[in-house]
Length: 66
Image 1 (tube, one colour):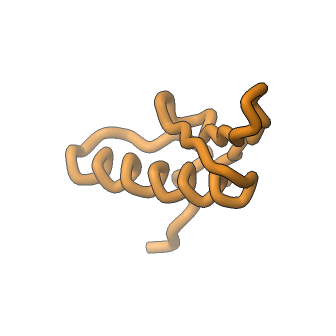
Image 2 (tube, one colour):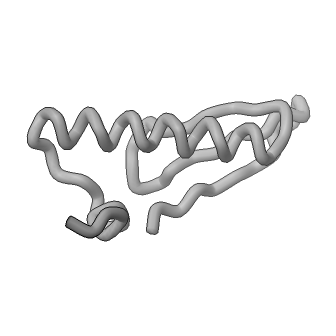
């Protein structure tokens, strides 16, 4: 399972990060919005990695049963 860490910035915005996928972080006006954006970005990054034959982080390998 991919972990999403969420923090509130000093300016009031929320930032969410998928720690197992470097660079996957997103801002939102609410905690839920930041999480949703980070999840969406993480899925796009994983799809790109799969398309290019790159490995997924261990935390993401069991997301799908095939």
